[in-house]
Length: 145
Image (cartoon, rainbow, N blue to C red; front, side, top):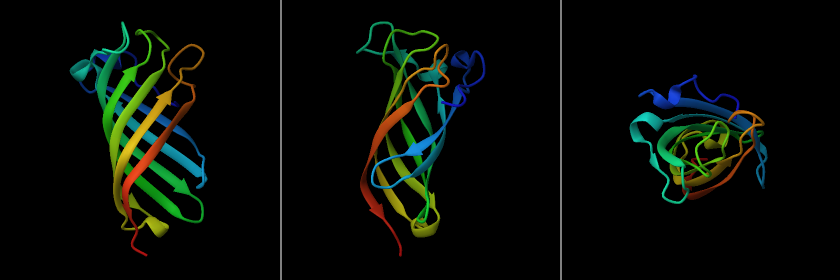
């Protein structure tokens, strides 16, 4: 996580805007960048699976850059949940779905959809600086070659 939102954003109707960048691993190597908004103040509710934790609606865009192939941008929506009781630097998990919104290179004109799960570990003293890991599964990806 490279940006965790403005101080006090958890109580604002506009939510917290998070940014993240990193590496794509697996059969296709590359990088990703993402920007998400979490609406803690307007959609926050207790996490029924974790005492003292909360969940909220989240949405944002993720761009995958795969050298030699192009870029693929997806819009993701779902829920982000604290995986322990609320605190200054607790882990979070996002579960959602995505739709392909644009692409370049072999992904120009691509369409598709799928599901995604990611886990964010906190940094040493705040939500920022921690590792993000996850997986995505396309239920459909159509390329126009």
